[in-house]
Image (cartoon, rainbow, N blue to C red; front, side):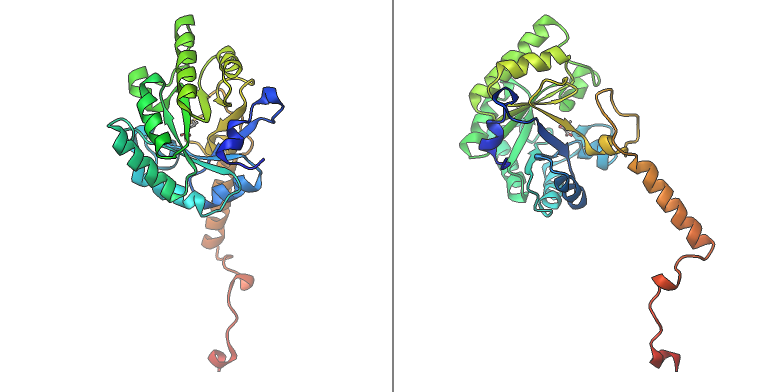
Length: 273
Ligand code: KIV
């Protein structure tokens, strides 16, 4: 598949498509390694704030910081589509500001932007699409709502809340988003949203039936400060591997075995004279 917006928009499993594979990336090497693994979409997520910059939540990154990391990911020239998160407050204070902020992310190398929220985002989605900027939606456990939610809690657990989520998804689809991330909902909600929508759903903690899956790369490779959430499957322990490598380097420096002959430049004959 070519990973542009029209091909992603058409990517429904019920039409025979393979699930969309999306991971986050925040820098050039990560984008390069993930792209070499054949992922379809790289998300420069605002999880940058907590995963890379050490903040408690995603509310602490700006558009300029996001653009800085989008530039690094784009420098890998990946085959994968690059989507960038619009950070908190970059699309909440008027459509002109939202278009300008999204434009900054596109000029940094993103091919589309993602934003959180449902019906309340109608106007901003319309303004971005009018400016030719493709939009991915994000519903359910939207991390930018952490203060309003009172924590990271599974959403849409009641019939009314699930109905509201479905209505929000249909509204976003009718406004023209090309894809929807669904986070932290009971698996039945993931299934029903996926059945109800013509655009693809990409789940994170939304069960196995969505049209794709996304994980935060640091969760997947074992580089997180805290134990990851239930929905994460860990495929490597790079954190432990890194600590081990650095500890062995420290040991070699301290006992004088690094650098050895192989890691030192030869003395030129002229200097030996
Ligand atoms: O910022 C992010 O990493 C995300 C994913 C959790 C979907 O939005």
